[in-house]
Image 1 (cartoon, rainbow, N blue to C red):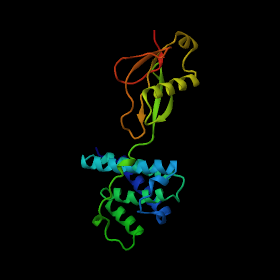
Image 2: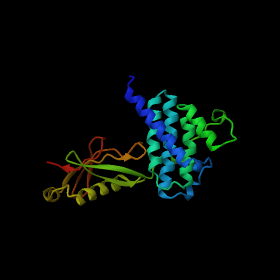
Image 3: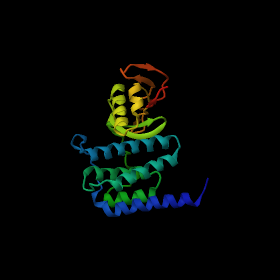
Image 4: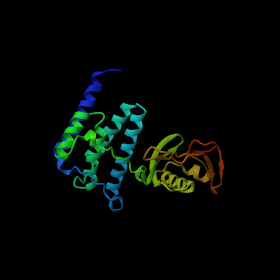
Length: 231
């Protein structure tokens, strides 16, 4: 459905893109950085770049152009908020974003392309870069911790964490926030519910388990973990 607000939103996005390249155009790069030498913040930006690249390609193939543009808007926020503007990853991300903008804002992308590469042929005669599939997922997952159906906190665990690691982190978090009453601890029976949300939006750790004081578990469905008192 056509609305003036949509036009204004896209205009703001394109203006932000232009201002970013006006300010940092000299940093645009096209040489892929070595992932082995990236700091934590650089690694996260590099992963986010590849996630955005993958989503834009996937959504465009499915003719879902609105979500492909939305992914670029989100990535623009990541670029603007990235602190080390001198990082080669930042410059490389600027270069890759030009490619992603091409199908959706061709005139702007072509202008940015020639500002970065004065003697280059048209952007649309270049081979579109591929996604680094080794960097499509973050190293950690964020897990919301619910107590009696209410969100109390979030914990981060390694992506390789086992189910026991996730439960331990969730229980420790609930203890620290005082979410479990003394009576609940003394009764020794809780219902643990933590839905693991991978930072890349991928599948998390799912499943429901009841736990008692001696940490014995029994299966009960498969839709998450919840921490609460069992009657």
